[in-house]
Image (tube, rainbow, N blue to C red; front, side, top):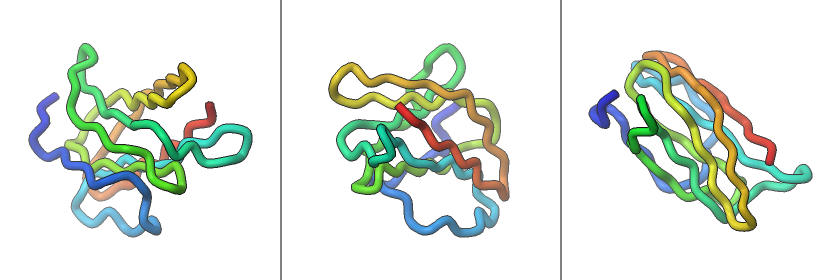
Length: 101
């Protein structure tokens, strides 16, 4: 996977909108029903290749504009919190990934 076509705004997830011609991966990180506001979401390609990272927003949210294909989403937060999810992205779709830690 290449980093081309993959960008990421600062943490937080604006209201979900249509993806248009973008491939979007977005979601929230929660613990005990509360947003995790300190930490990072990372998008990794094949073989744990680092592609992008964003800080989690005040709502625990993150959003990536990704190239189509298979990705690994990794969440890292204080207190040893680490979670991974396999995700896929495709043009014109919003892939929603909510992570409970």
